[in-house]
Length: 412
Ligand SMILES: NC(=O)c1ccc[n+]([C@@H]2O[C@H](COP(=O)([O-])OP(=O)(O)OC[C@H]3O[C@@H](n4cnc5c(N)ncnc54)[C@H](O)[C@@H]3O)[C@@H](O)[C@H]2O)c1
Image 1 (tube, rainbow, N blue to C red):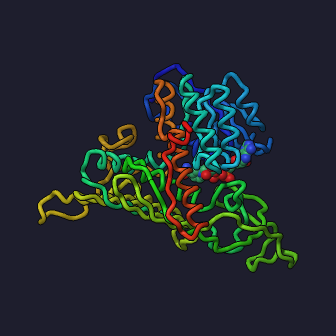
Image 2 (image 1 turned 90 degrees about the horizontal axis):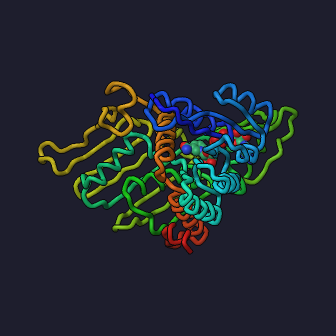
Image 3 (image 1 turned 90 degrees about the vertical axis):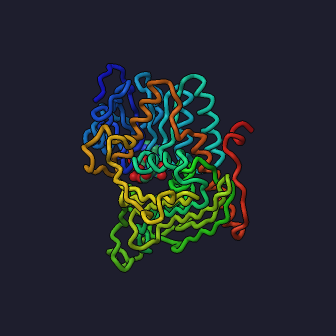
């Protein structure tokens, strides 16, 4: 429970899926963690006046506005939280940093490498003035994932040989599912690759402490044309008067548009230090709703994480006597485990939304104590460089494509 009088006044842009998840985090963070500053839910921004007023009321924000520029212009906002689609991340974050606001920006950092590079450069410049920024790769904040990183850092896996990562969903298997912004390159940058592939790229680089240095990729767009949406939020959408056979209520087919992103991306990669890795991101894995799984094999052991069992970690310790070897299931709910001392007694489980509360906790603590939070915008650029290399490799018949170190490209 926060005991300080110091406030960080947050202005958040976007109020749908991530807007709701971040609101939950801002509402909760002061009540669970003892922090050097209190997050205040000062202002929420959305383009529709009525809807943003409703969202402010429902999600617990003091005030609302319809233009993110108003939010940035205000003196009484310290933090800008960007929860919009990727096509507006760069513009909003750059303006916020220039105005001296700390920025939390959802992933992927941007839609292109050049946007991400500009954001990373601006963040590095802003650091000198004490302005902090962070990219919202929230899965780093699942306690079991943070513990996975500790096991690797403590040498419990020995020399890392393999990384195996999949992130699978199925929400667009139906060819009549409409053409939401996530299926349009100009809005989303890429498809399954940038939306969910970005998470496993960041997560595996974070857990291993190693960088992806090169990739060979294939991507596919299975359904190339889809009906236009009447409305959408998060992963849900509607088509105007559409019937199950794809015909509208009046018997006419609804207007359609081209899908301009990948539905699935599969790639092999090398990480520095001689690690071989495989990655798969798909929205066509029928039956898999939000299935993120990562396994890391080292010379002394293996560790595996499955988001559908997010309180657990599988660990194989090859240093134990042969007769006792086997995978153990660690229930990551002890007070000694990352983040867990603030929650419930051992064995009392946490869920998806807690990763966002932990993200808010780490961000507030970093800003209030004058430390740069991670993942930084440079880390976000590193992921963007991998996304770009995957796309280019796939376009060139899976040719091997090197990934530059992000910091070198910011300095260049
Ligand atoms: N960290 C995660 O696990 C995770 C999960 C889902 C989405 N995301 C990321 O979060 C971001 C938002 O995704 P979402 O699922 O919340 O999308 P969404 O469609 O549910 O919501 C987007 C919101 O942004 C608003 N918006 C769009 N353009 C705007 C503008 N110019 N000014 C003000 N508001 C604007 C929309 O009105 C809506 O409220 C994306 O970058 C996405 O990749 C992250």
